[in-house]
Length: 196
Image (cartoon, rainbow, N blue to C red; front, side):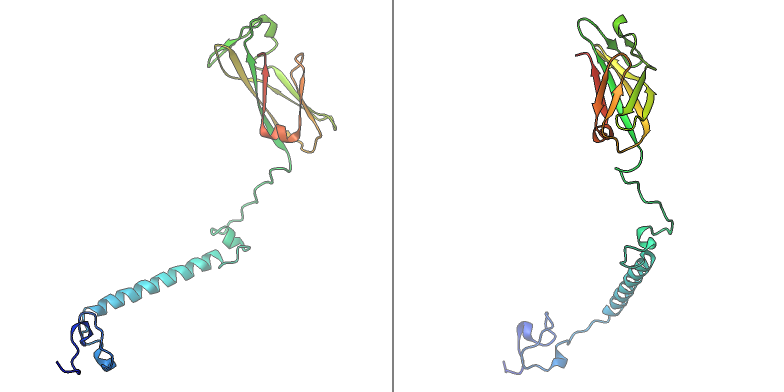
């Protein structure tokens, strides 16, 4: 074999399409296929379509500037900002559970609660009060029966629209005493148990 005709993968137009060092550049692509034309065209159209979609998407969202309303809401509506959790009025959600003792047996089911005579002041519709110590604001609500089992009955309550900023808050069930809470404790929810 002469040095002008390389063999193997180095031969012009060989399997890898590589040329031996010293072979003219024009012979490195000795085999060209006419079937690549449509493939190149489809690839070019696909890339163009992708670019159009990306550019159009950025224009709808207002680019990368997150301070524009379009970037915050791509539908063009101006939604109000969400409320700040620690400002404004808040709602106190709570439970009041009466637990059975030897002296005061209690039992309930999904629809009713059986309480002894000594606990007859407690039940569905009993008024419960919330007072803020510093400014004297008072809110009232009623207990609502939630359910029970063989040894307890649970009631729920809710105080809506409570003004924040109080130093201490007292929840009172008339004739049964009062419990003191901070604002953070009220916001977290109140669980009161009688008996046990």
